[in-house]
Image 1 (cartoon, chains in turn red, orange):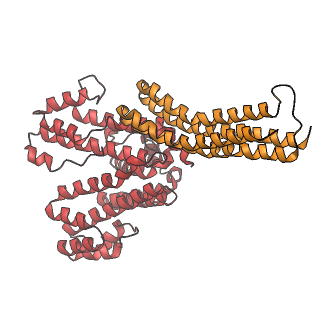
Image 2: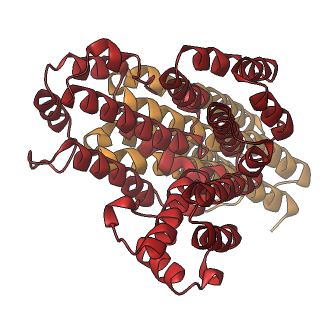
Length: 322
Length: 157
């Protein structure tokens, strides 16, 4: 796509960036004493539907919906955002498989604005017509459905679909702009690190890890799995040697510090997009920044609602894009 | 009509065509960016409109040189001059700077204007500074205009 095609979108994103939360706004939110005060603050900032009657979770889901409504208005093909939208789409696939086999239907477990839609997925899974799914979902859906049906192992079902999701992200990045490709590689690398850490903590086998890990450039799954088998220190040493020293440092502090590092790392990666005027990068950066902002607000609201100490919330607050 | 007249007319056409093309591409690019900002914040219409208009000057410069050329060769006054092929080619060469520089600078000024519109979207109080960046590109369009006008005027018909 020619650069000019993103000129309108980037200019609109620049205008939207003004309303993104900066660190000082997050500090102001943190300074609110109660959950109710936080909600009033957010409503004053234009969050939610303006009724003043929404709870925090509904407000956050409303804000997530707004991200994709905005993106749709930019006139860019949604295929360009596959690397961002796949996790939601594959999450919906997992949910559809599980609810079909358990016969429990919950609409709120699904993400909105995905392809295929919630109802399409339900219908496809119910009729076992996997051929109607997108190519990158078809095999994984069939495999996960049969695995869950025969073994009742929900974790294995998740592993199969999560891996298919990461592979779809990498595949989409092959023909995408540099910034999307870099984002995809980072997402997959971070997902691999998370898998390795969890497998190390739960003492999973080498075979299980190899089934869950996804090959990507700059990270050898075999070496990562072996490092995880060797224990926490071996895993940290491997991460340091493969250019993820900061991830290793965060892991040594706490799991929440590591989660924070993952999000901060992505935001940092998108910082140069502030200076781009004609590529899709700023649009991607805006989506990631909004999701990061909503996640941070969610952490603060949850902490305030449960009366957690400020220091506990502060150590989980992500870096802001602006 | 003599070959000299044909060359001179081609020169006038080159000045108007290429400079106009540069401007239309530039104004179009800046217009996309301006629409993006106004769709979100209509209050910035005035500022982004000025930015969009900046790449439009190349077309005006081309038109000016075109007029001077037509006037020089007598087409506007009703009495066409009898031009030798050499004189016609000289007029064509004199029209090239504003045509070619107008094309390239118009395109690039449009891109710079679009980028500067991004500044206005985020920091409207920086309008003055933002306008300087596309205005710098204008320098080269003005230089080419000067040379084209001086050269066309200096040719003895």
